Length: 108
Image 1 (cartoon, helix red, strand yellow):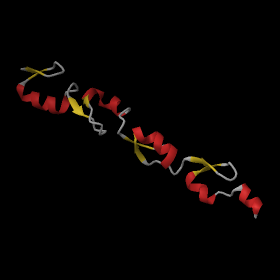
Image 2 (cartoon, rainbow, N blue to C red; image 1 turned 135 degrees about the horizontal axis):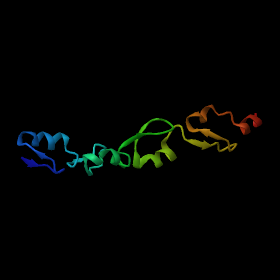
Image 3 (cartoon, rainbow, N blue to C red; image 1 turned 90 degrees about the vertical axis):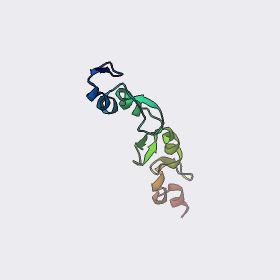
Image 4 (spheres, rainbow, N blue to C red; image 1 turned 90 degrees about the horizontal axis):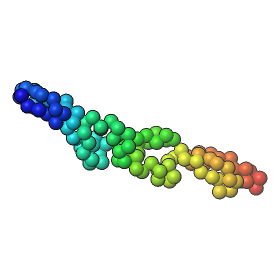
């Protein structure tokens, strides 16, 4: 019998399978892509905070690395709110071309 990292006592025939596939104490590289070495038992929690894991933008649904979300929301999201430079009304960025600006209507 051999002991695994989780202290399970295993037959030699079970050891390799246990360590390669089942043991929750074995460290693996983060599947999110950050390169961290994380125990299998902790991977789910790590992925909730992994800075390079892609997550959907709540506004436009585009997949963006978590660490880039603030920048995406401020500068790149097509569904971000912006302010019309003419009238000050808040408009969704990709709807700006369809915006009926109150100031432009008065000028006509």
